[in-house]
Length: 89
Image (tube, rainbow, N blue to C red; front, side, top):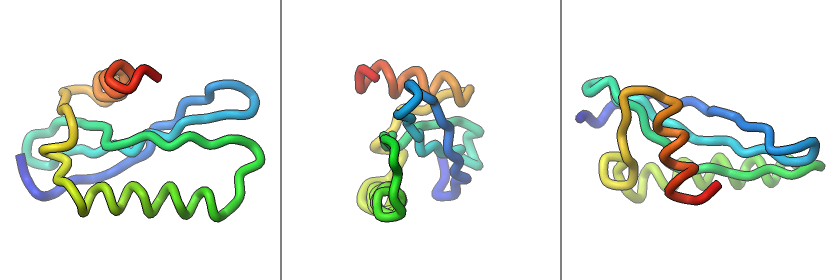
């Protein structure tokens, strides 16, 4: 696996007032997917909460390599399902 990744968010609506945002990586060398972390949002959402979630994702990436932090999968939804299982979401 490489040092180069693309990132994307996957969203899941929990109910009419809550959602979870998964911060996902795609490894450009191995062509595998991982979920680094998930952030929960509750209505009403303010800009400070969104900023905190973004900063947290970046700090986690810099602090510990996704190669060490994450489980990697061939499919994006497999990575999301694994994250849910590991963290009992």
